Image (tube, rainbow, N blue to C red; front, side, top):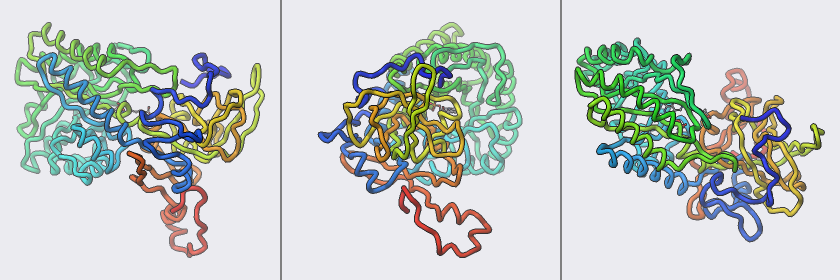
Length: 475
Ligand code: LLP
């Protein structure tokens, strides 16, 4: 979380304010001989020359490698306890046609939570049988569409949804496999988890109702209960919360097993990544093995067979693969307790990365267009929006000569940045460029000012021939 202190306790003055911390940057990120940031063999300055700033860049090989590493980690952990696993990529982190291709080619299934995400996954050719459909308020139309598409599992989130999904499946003449989302009462975040008795939140049904509602699901011939689901939070660095949650769910799972098969257990996503050099998530292999061990122990205690497992990572696959490039517009010194902080204002902000403003998320930054030997200076990277909370990087040390015209790169922006983007202040959303083996390609087009104006019913009816091209990202 961003701190109210002038400098967060974890932030150290770096020996080299040009260095790229290995865990925070995509695996192919490096500096070329001229000191420019290069990702997957493509230098940031030439990307910007072609596509403008702000610019979302995704390292395809990095994303694919993480997808396959995570799938293998869970495959191996499941095999070690005599079962198998389905790893769904959680599309809410960032979904586009290219991403669906990458993750499905790496052997992952796809988790969607709206009709829109479902439409992207289907249009990209994802196998419907390997799509999971979530949401605490799916419309009847969304449910019907999912059932008709042959979606592999629908996650029932409330009592009311049981009848809705059952009716939609009956109308379509199908038996729909479903999971029941349970609120395990475990809430986890980066460094800790709280195993509260009651959790006041909108997702899932209370653990105490799981057996009753699971039984109710079974009473519908058009539904096939394949198991329970829970998701305990996001940006979690170790296995303890997952293990606690698995233990709790297995009680209800074991009860339901007495009256019928419960072949699967889905423990959700939430595996954390490094946003700054202070973040040290446990390796995914360790987390996967610890969760599997907890499941095996729980099953032994309840005298039930080990179910097939499912997980839904999003951030840990796409987050570290993304970097956002900006151009520095202004800098200004601002006196703070004990010194000075330089505000470095960039040409994007909370419209392309809302996470700092929304959650107090912490990011890091580097000058992308050059290296500098100037002494490190404390900076805050601010956006261009008309709001004082429009901060992208709360605190960082950059070379003290950072100046207008420098390109700035913010790493670990692959998850929940593009997907949470907005048009606040009528700022068009930037494109997304995938880089791989020295080649760059657009995977999501940027918006133009003309497109924004065209959505305005009154302006669209008037003559727009005077439109000036946008600054920054060209059409
Ligand atoms: N499964 C379910 C049911 C979820 O609700 C989520 C995330 C995931 C999987 C994927 O979690 P991940 O592995 O990506 O942490 N906008 C927030 C994060 C919201 C997460 C919502 N649910 C952020 O930017 O931190």
